[in-house]
Amino acid sequence: MSAGEKVITNPVKANAGWKELPIGGIIPQGGTARGFFTGGWRSLTPVWDAEKCISCLQCWIFCPDMAIQVEGGKMVGIDLDYCKGCGICAAACPPRTAAIKMVNEGA
Amino acid sequence: MVAPLKQLSLRPDRLTSGHRACAGCGFPIALKMVLMSTEDPVVVANATGCAEVCTSIFPYTAWDVPWIHSAFENAAATISGVEAAYQSLKRQGKIASDKTIRFVAFGGDGGTYDIGFQSLSGAMERGHNMLYVCYDNGAYMNTGIQRSSATPYGASTSTSPAGKVRQGKVQYRKDLAAIMAAHNIPYVAQASIHNHRDLMNKAQKGLETDGPAFLNVLAPCRLGWGFDPKNILDICKLAVDSTFWTLFEVEDGKWKLSYKPRNKVQVTEFLKTQSRFKHLFKKGNEELLEQIQADIDAKWEELLERCGANA
Image (cartoon, rainbow over all chains, first blue to last red):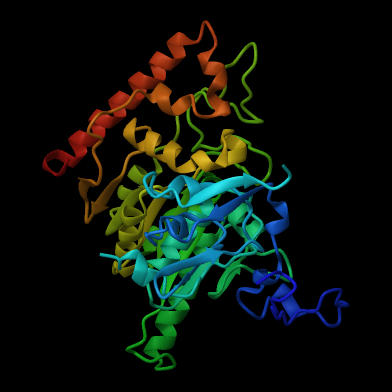
């Protein structure tokens, strides 16, 4: 899914006037940062090889951006809308498995 | 013991994507692991710092749990007030007696070792049922890498720069975990993000402890420490294998070592991975490196002695 397809609701409207803002600067709903896509920060992109992957979830537990997608205990992909390209997933992947490679997007 | 990763992966993210910490930042790893270690509802108070700023830029929040930020110095006071209100509501029957809510405060080393120290000490002494987690990155990273009392000896920061006269910070870091243990609270521990099982087990223990608990977590800052973010786990491992950072628990006053390196590596192996220490490797600074090694060796011996038979 790309950023364009994701629908993330935020009860606080963008460009809201002061009368529309929640009192006290409260953010009335959790997890609304999912509507802010940090994938544009990336210069290196993780490329995941599903065939090599053993779903040990080392990448998932260490990813600082919760960008590793896991379903039913199995890794299914990397959410590039949020991945900042730090390379921790590739470093955490067991050397014998080496299912994630970092690739320079600009090159 | 915390559940295996496959089971943990079925739990919803309590800290979500879309926060604005740097690529490869250490604190989100620490925070997500702590929040993952329990299935009970959690209320979080956050001290001012990187974690607070990056996760709560209005109108976005990366927290999918109730979360409060009030000021730099009072995360512990804030969460202890919430916990006291909860106890009162329970006594009044307004919260079901069989419902369990956990209370956590997160602070960086600036908000914990320095600015939030008095409110932390007070909350621990009053015996609130809470866990305070310090993500220690060894300086005020959010405001531009100013030294804190957690900054290690010799580290170059914007307020302890290495130059012609001084070679980085001239003081040693405060041993906060030992100070917390001296509060005679039921649970104190130190952990590092590279060892997720150890960290999550300690977080779970701290959360389930009846009374105050303190957890100090090593969470490197790629910008302030100066390293390529992909190396973060290796750097943490070197910190622990050189005993620059030690993993231990203090349960009801009993010290217990969680990890003893099979081959203790020289601290220079850890120092040379980061640009904040690079001046120490210049000609003429050999004595400083020896001094740092001697200090670390002495503190390791002290810890082994404290742990005694549990080492």
